[in-house]
Image (tube, rainbow, N blue to C red):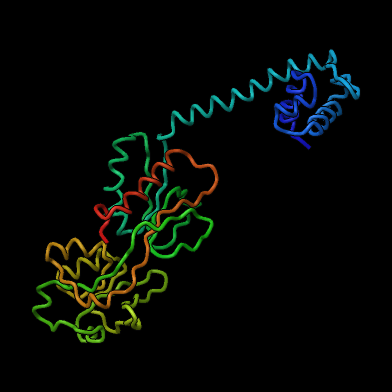
Length: 303
């Protein structure tokens, strides 16, 4: 069974062609499909549209009148889609784009990376939500997201764009006061920082390559924010295991010293994702592709 617009399109083609076979050829379908569509339309209207026998067909007077009206109706429908498509294309970079990102990534990088795009497309309206936990993409109306670690929802369109490593670092001032560890186990005798998992209230363990995770029983500093931990390490309050994208600029300028580099854990990944697989507006695709390229560039995102 065809919908009524399909029936009208097939009927108009049949009305303009010398035969149902020719109409089928123009439509890229079978003569049987054209015949069934005409019969279905005749049943809906209660009037014959064609006089036909095994050798030829002729459109009826009612059919000619119906064909004229059908062409006008189809032109109106086609015009409706064309006008709105043109309007969407004209407004392809105007409107809201909801973006989700972890706190530290969002605060330190997101706006800086998006500024060139905003200057080029001033009609973009960004709605940024920062959360270290997976964001409710429906409730928050998220169009594009940035996430560290595995993507749990396989229905998302997600691309791994940058490795996320972790560095054990300390300030030069602190290292003047304590012994420099040669093995991860020696860290337990030193002032350490931990980040608290907001979901469980428990500290995240320290991770090392080819070794068990290190649980810190009595941290010198604890908090639930990676940037606050970084500030404490920079101040010389503790040694920390800090994400590379946060620590590396301070290592490069000498304000932090890397430790136990041979034991660094395998990096995880930063993903840029889209929760929607169906039709997506041009402005959302624009932001998605821009962030993919920006985070993939080591000049923009340390690794």
